[in-house]
Length: 146
Image (cartoon, rainbow, N blue to C red; front, side, top):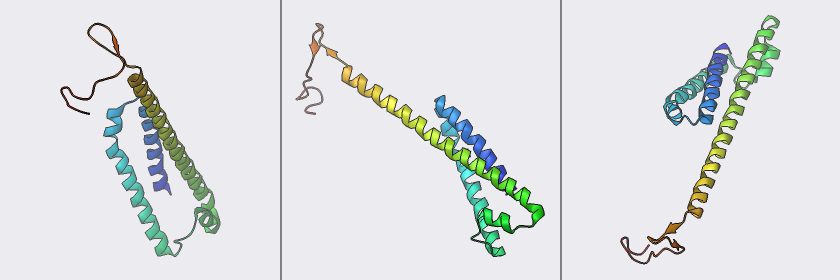
């Protein structure tokens, strides 16, 4: 549990930094951070594989944290309870921060889409004599029919 919590604490800090970088539009950092994020994912998968193997070897493969706390020796219950609560806190923070990141990105993309559509729809073309062109001739010309 202590190893898990160290992992989730570092991942939680990384995700918080990622959220700040998304808000600040630091795209270079975000691209460069993909390797670090993949490393976190691989480390988490490795920890989980080791936990599953250990639990299976001990015959407690399907046990939930609450069940483990109930069944552990009394002197270990406070420590295990604290570790489980910390893990829940980190996991909840990671989930909510990732949800925030997705929401922020979606809002930013929506704003960009509106700006692009507004720019295209309000753009006007004028002839050399200053007359506004309302219909473009796409039946021939340099590129041919479009």
